[in-house]
Image (cartoon, rainbow, N blue to C red; front, side, top):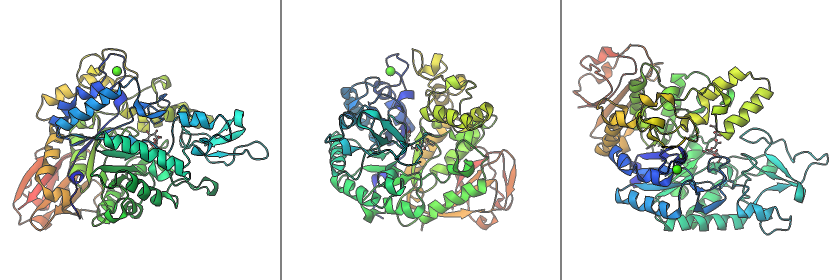
Length: 543
Ligand code: TEU
Ligand code: CA
């Protein structure tokens, strides 16, 4: 496999609205991010994935873009963006932009013009269909944000398609003019010196709506190859596609080198394991064995072809330590355990803002505290369908996207040092104890542990390119695996439970053990009876 710079890079995702507010309006912004570049450089990350900062009515907090080549005033100016790119580059940090081209905002000039008449030259930039004879929607296709995926446009007497909110009309990727417009815009950003793209719901651009196909349509890969060749293909950029339905075989189609499509994709199979019947609003407990099987499958299937992304959370997902660890008594220890398991696997690790200090889910007890369009839409849809208020509030607390969007907790100062104004969304009250200032002052903090793990990847090629072999596969509390190449063997052991467990690793007796990283004081003198305390994790070099 040809070595790429992003093979040993660690990516840090910033949700700009919630990261750092520099001008006291309660909304995070580009200059706030600039003020934290030293913090990020100190952490040791190589890339920032910047969630959208483009002009937007903020119906979906920027994932509804009204001008791809302008910065939303609440986030700053294009000069601020250029300064961020330059100052990040000075620190060896690349900026990967979020590319949201399955849809635009309904306030985008293209859509405004498309709505002027059925003969508008922009009409076919979007997906329009006539009503059924009885006036109803063209199909019973649902929006991912609840309700119908079709919105009636009275002035021109047709429905338009929106797989997300009705203010996010889908672009028509069967129209070559759309390809051209998007490629031109992408090259404009590439010429500004960005480090790559995260491609929002990119598996949807091959949709064939009249055949009921949304994800993974037959035209998807040809469209991506065409995009690759027209834009980033001959540049050394990181491209990561968000592909909710990807299987390992599909992931190889996206990320095998010879495919000339993307560097890697985000797959979500480990995420949806805790969604009963695929419904995120029916959260269920983690089944660790299934979780291990999925992660192991992805490690083994992409061993020779393609490349894994590695993540526990992002701006759409609950906080890792609340979801997969213990955000109470063992918050610090379980956050470190989760980081150990993720950062020693093969692939590019992604850290979501606040994960590096063990930020937790928030416990909103009033619906009004929630801001996310998806959560508010589904509260309405589900309660109208008979789900109780309490059950839906529990589901929001477990899996709502606002869990990831409460302001970054910088200090114990008012509003966690995020803003001197009123934050757009409430700060998690635990900011008094959970904040970067406190973590940076303690060598035992989650922050310092992440720093160690990020550095470990740089120091050990076996973590970047070594083989992955599962260990204790049948264990229902312990996740263990080997990373090895012809010169080095590294054993990762993690107790995913709040109980003490003893495991038999006698197969590794005879090696000397060097503990490279550990979140506790694991005694490795007797591997045949290795005692693991709650959430114990360690990276052991076998010599
Ligand atoms: O998310 C795709 C998406 O479908 C998620 O919203 C997911 O379905 C849901 O949140 C379950 O967790 C991308 C962006 O990451 C998201 O923020 C946008 O809202 C969405 O696309 C539309 O652009
Ligand atoms: Ca601001």
